[in-house]
Length: 198
Image (cartoon, rainbow, N blue to C red; front, side, top):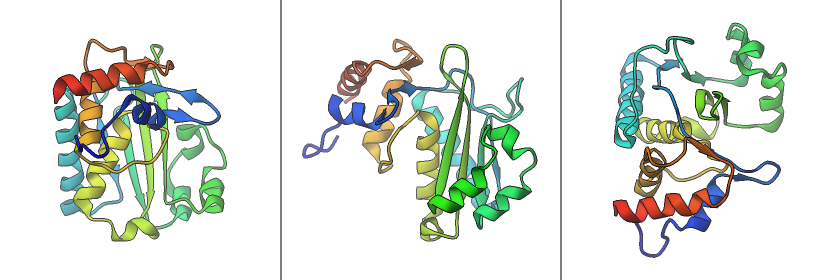
């Protein structure tokens, strides 16, 4: 923890609160089966290693395949949002018919989408990264760490991938805590787990 900017319950609550939907924090309930599209082999290894290391640190398994979906964590690297049209059944995959138009219109550099199981735990995560914009200069290892963290929990806001965030993710995967919560008081429990880890 950094003494001048500790991970308080208020900070944690803000990380999972959307202005229109309120507080929602969920973790994966099933093993993560990642697949990555659009990277050269040498960079692909960096991302695979970062995803496995991050979830291992959180105490959550990473496997080759999900029995229902094959892959349940899908990361797409694109040179432009126009390349989304090359992804088969994109509208069915995302449930958003006009996703390419939305992303081009908003000039977004990335987009993340979650699917949930019956207990509200994360069932699947799709991350789309447009590497022609601000992400073009990102260091592969740093970007890989950030992608892993963005997929680990249902964060509502952007954040810096650092040791505090890694500790928060590990706290959220404590088996004592529920896999998902829409109660802001959950942030207090996460803060308490982080204090116990320190």
